[in-house]
Amino acid sequence: MSLKKITSLTMLLAMLTMTFTGIILFITPPGRVANWANWELFGISKELYGQIHSAFMVLFVIATILHIYYNWKPLISYMKNEAREFVLFTKDMIAATILFLLFLFGTIYQISPFSNFLEFGDEIKSSWEKEYGTSPYSHAELSSLKSFTKKLNYDLEVSRTILTSNNITFEEEQSLSQIAKLNNVSPKFIYDLLRKNFEKGEEKTVPLSGLGKKSIKEVAQTLGLSSQEFISKLKALELEAKEDDKFKDVVESKDLSPSSVLEKLGYKKAE
Image (cartoon, rainbow, N blue to C red; front, side, top):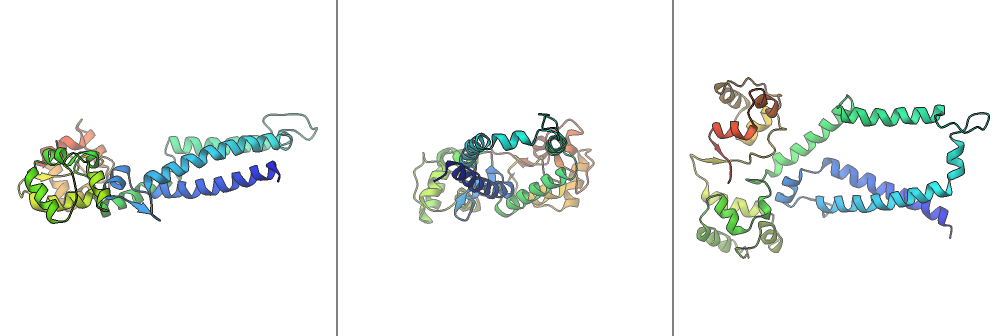
C-alpha cells in the first residue's frame, strides 16, 4: 500500500462527504424548527449532519497537510517563473488570490450574486418553517413538561389527562424532547395535542422569535392574517410597510423591536 495514494483518496472521500453534508446543512430548517419537529433527511437529524460535517472536516485537514507534504515540490513549482526562480505572486497565484478574495468579500458584504445565493438558502429554510411551524418560545423542547405547561398557562393536571388519553408515556420532570423521543413523536406533536384543548379565542400566543428576518408577507402568514390586514395594523402604529419588506427593517425605522410591535398588536409572548 502507498500512504501517498491513501492520502489522496482520503482527501477525495472526505471532500465528497463534506460537499454532501454542506449542501444538506445549507437547505436544512433553522435549529429551532428542526429540533421542534424532529426533522430528519435520510433518517439523519440536522445535528448529526453537523457532527458528520465537522468530523470529516478534521479528516480533510489532516489529509490536506499530508497531501502538501507529499506534493511539496510540485506545489513550489507552481510559484516559480519561467526562469525557475521562486516568486510568491505568480500570475496563477494572483488569479487564485483574486478568486479567493472575491468569494470572501462577496459573501461578507452581501454582493450579488453571492447575496442572491444566500437569500435562496434563506428562502428554503423559511419554507421548512411554514411547513413545520415553530415552538411557542425559544428552545421550548428543552423545557420539562411541568415548566412548559406553566409558561403557556396550561393546567398541569388537565395536560396529564390529555397526554395519558393519547397513550403518551411521560414524567413531569422530563423535557418535551425526552418525552417525544420516548414515544417516537416530535415535541411539536405533544404541543399540538395540548394546544387544541387550551387555545383561547381572545388571547393569541405566537412564536415571537425568528420573525425579524421574515418579510411582511411571511409574518402575516405566521399570524394567520392577509398581507394587507397586517400592513393595515402596522399602519395604525405609524409603521409603513410593503409585502416584501423585512419585518425587522420596518420596525427598527421607529426604534422598535419585532416582539414589542407584535405585543402591541395583541399577540402574547410565552413567558
